[in-house]
Length: 276
Image (tube, rainbow, N blue to C red; front, side, top):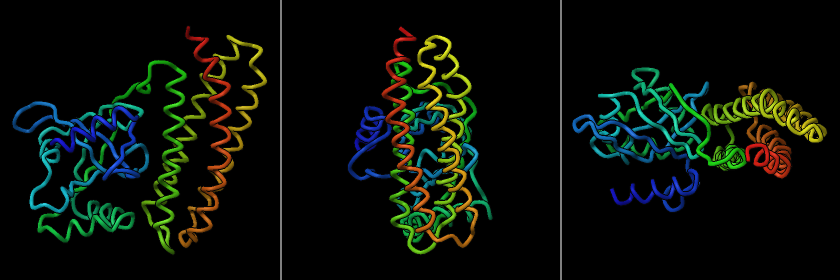
């Protein structure tokens, strides 16, 4: 419990980043309702993207004989709160069974053989749970500028994780790594669409002299969309060479990092002025 408390505090203080045992890992905080107590309980859990805004978590409990308490809580009450370091949202949990569970667990093992080691330690079938958001809100930020930086850092973090996962992937491109890349592409598309349709018109209307900067940012969005389209095309090849796909990821990373740096330098002062 002391270990969990330390991880939770560090996670919240550093927008989802932690050191120590979980450094460089995919991590969420989930708050479930106690099956017996009815009280809220928060736990750090590893996760993988599951596509279409869903998230997969696994009740390994380090291979112990019993399911983790949070799993029993979700069985009793599938509604929970999820913190990803940027957003806090309500979600509904679905416990996978049968072939769906087995296929998802295989994906996880492809991504990290440690899951198979946990399963080998116990006679219980390690559960796989899908989380799907049912409500949410804006980023956990005190200002629009801070919110923009939080979202951008989440993309930087995801690219960092994906590149690390490629380094561990070997000669084949696993299903989970494909999903991670596709989820990133979808997230970028949604973020840039939101800026194009809402933030940019608002700023252009309030600060007409800022229009040339907005046009440059729009053009950069088009370029990044082209790169994500090319990455998706590489991922569509079932026999894709990981090195070829990684090269597309690196091209996207280089372009995106320049774009994010420029956008922050230009937009954050204007956003803060617009809201002051």
